Image (cartoon, rainbow, N blue to C red):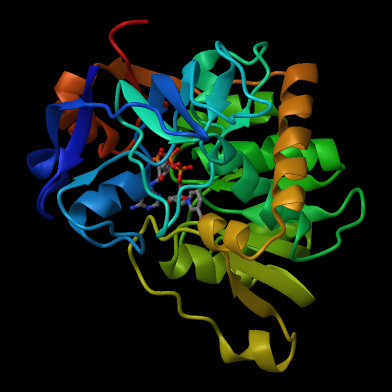
Length: 333
Ligand SMILES: NC(=O)c1ccc[n+]([C@@H]2O[C@H](COP(=O)([O-])OP(=O)(O)OC[C@H]3O[C@@H](n4cnc5c(N)ncnc54)[C@H](OP(=O)(O)O)[C@@H]3O)[C@@H](O)[C@H]2O)c1
């Protein structure tokens, strides 16, 4: 059986080095399943992989795509608990196990997938592997917040940021959200954001005016944005950095360490999964699925592309001011 897949054989300008090819899939071995991929988003990490600046760099030529949802089409021997027609995500890719999910089909070990409830729409399920768990872990694994406490985050209109708002609400926390422009303020408020502040160079004062000092800050930008969020963290609080969209170094005032003992952590989902018992990771995914089924919300999608249009899709994903994610949607669905 043949299928299209997106790959790269060199690093460089992302939209120039991304390519599509047709590849034959191997026969199934024991423990393997074949999954027909339905949809897959383009995330900032995929762009970094193409540019050669990401932590995870499989040997070239390498298939691309870090998350997706698909339908189980065929089962090898000794597969347990996974059935034909199940909807599955593949959240455990890492340095040792890399498939590349921008493809029509993938063949993988059944233990590398999680079944997602069919009530969750396929385009939304395509975005369930990376950002929701990142948000959930950052909200729960660094500080034990009490209900009613504030969390401050920049990059609030990103996929991660929207999940932070949704999950914080479920956990009973309030969110103070920093965005770059006022275009997304209304949609974040509708999602449950308690406060939304448009970035300014000295915004820590504005943050403190609405939220006081928070015990937990989340930083996906770096540079002055991170510094301003950090200045609004209270004594013994934490700032967790998970992204660097602004591509600028963080500079933190000495007083935050000396007088307030603020802790600065980094978070990487793949690394965290590798260091955390599988049952705990699966339980957290299950909790996310249950919340989403009980109270659905939608990560906006700006446009879907076919795999053959990968260069245009990647170029679109790199544009700022998008009103949603860019997704590949596989042709046969
Ligand atoms: N560490 C982890 O485990 C982990 C897991 C998931 C994601 N991440 C990281 O989290 C970040 C967000 O990912 P995502 O999938 O949520 O992204 P996304 O939905 O594609 O959104 C991208 C966001 O980046 C903002 N942005 C783009 N360029 C920027 C700049 N120069 N300065 C400030 N903001 C900028 C965009 O804001 P505008 O709308 O204003 O353009 C938008 O909010 C990425 O850095 C990603 O690598 C990390």
